[in-house]
Length: 361
Image (cartoon, rainbow, N blue to C red; front, side, top):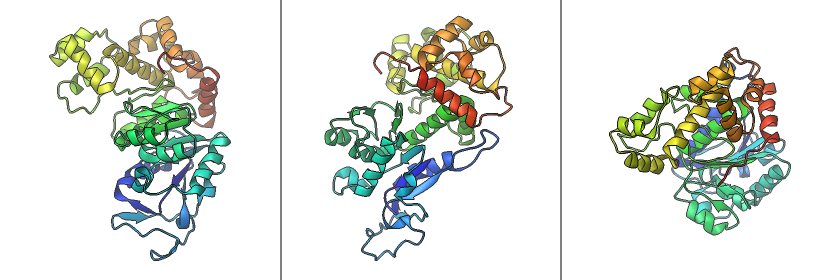
């Protein structure tokens, strides 16, 4: 993974996205997956050398009083050969149109995309991918405060401001701040599986199940809505996925009418109660298939999807692969490890070979 950092003077605000990337991909977890990611920070401009020039140098912008300087031995040439290229943010002046993005950065991003690297942006980093032409003809998102500007300046991009992140195959974008963490965990889920992503999420003390499959939309198990009546019932439901649950059950638990519950959940998560339940059950099935040796029939029961036939139907429709084939990609199921390069390549090959088509996505 190569991370393109635009400024060697990084404002406090942009440190979050950069920190998320470094935390998720830069700290090895050999007990979860070995090998882990190989992270490389690549700086544009004078900080691409190990000994950056002084703050008074004409080759670098004047430092902000609220910022940090990045020192890394890698310049933008470090993006060459990377499997994944991430741009976590761009300077606010570039978002506002007061300053152009560096030409060398845009050229490096185009080269990476042309050779087939997976391209990822967090928050306002979407402006760099859009300026490089990587988002042309694609669906993308950014922080809701910037989506209007992104759509106006890049009309060839379909900007969606209603989602936490967008997975458009080899190009992924996220909304702002904590949505960047959602997307990073989604990448781990894609690469190393639901079980590894869930375990990592627990270590980061964030919700473990915010799944994103090939058909992207907002999927939140317990959304942070500030709605004291909604979050507890969703948590209650995730603990009882193996039981029959109806909208009336959830509404009664929340002390609302079914109509009110439906409306409030859709406003908070972007999906209906039954769709939300299905996503949680599919995520549970993923974890069980990866981490246990339970028969597929039992996985269907514990995830609340019922029979093995019903599990296969929903799993194949959503992920483009059968539960049995999915499990084969994780030879170390049962919590015994083995989620290394072979399992990563197996899942990628399976998903790339069988694409899911969903109405409206």
